[in-house]
Length: 266
Image 1: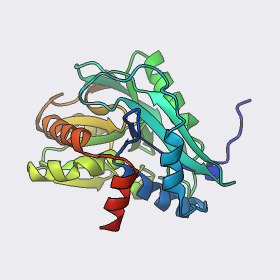
Image 2 (image 1 turned 120 degrees about the vertical axis):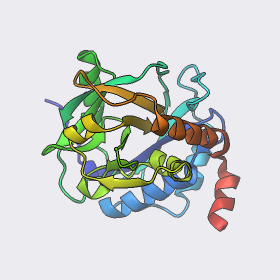
Image 3 (image 1 turned 90 degrees about the vertical axis):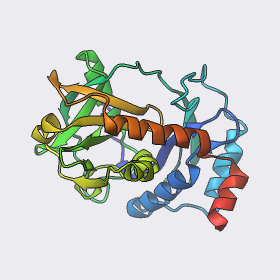
C-alpha cells in the first residue's frame, strides 16, 4: 500500500534556480510559503529564508541545466516540515516542444479544508496525474472536481474566453494560488487582457478562444486539445502576451539573498 502522508506535515514551493545563488521570484514564493504555513499550522522561523539561501551553497546541480531561453536552468523545491526541518531539493527541468500540448481530464484529488489550495506535503496525486497523462499519450492532466476545473497536474491553467477575459480556477474552490500567474498578470492586463478567477467547466474550455498552462518549471505552454478535442487558437493573443511577460520575468526576476532583503525592506 502507498505510504499515508499527512498533508499538513510540510509546506513548500518550487521556484527557478540559476544553479548558483539566485532564485526566481523568491519574494513571491516565500510569501506564499508563509501564507500556506499559517493555514496548515506550521511555524516558520524568522530566519527561514536566510537558511534556504545558505543551503544553496551545498546543493549539487542535479544534472544538465535546461538550455531553453524561456525556462529556468533548474528548479528548487524549498520548504519546511512541521518538525522544523528545512529542505532544499534540486530538480532538472524538462524541455518542452514548440508545438502546443495535449491534455486529458482527470478527477482532482480531494482534500478537506484547510489543506485545499495549499502547497502541502501530499503532492504525489499531482505527480501521478502527470504520469497517467503521459501513459495515455497526452502531455499534461487537467484536474476536475464536480465538473469544475480545479488545477493542472503540476501547472496552473488559464483560458481566454470570448469576452476577452483570461480566467483561472478559483483559489476558494481548491486551486493553488499560482505564483506564475501573478508574475504575468500585470503584463497581460497591460496588453488588454483582464485576469479573473471563475468556475471553469469543460464546456467553457472547449468554447474558449485559447488556453495556456504555466508554472515555474515549464514556463508558458499553449494547450491545443483536451481529451482529443480542439481548444480554440493554440497560440493566439493570450499565449503571446503571457509568453512575452514571462520572458521579461525570466530575465529580470532573479534574487540572491541581498536582493531579497532589499525587496523586503521596501
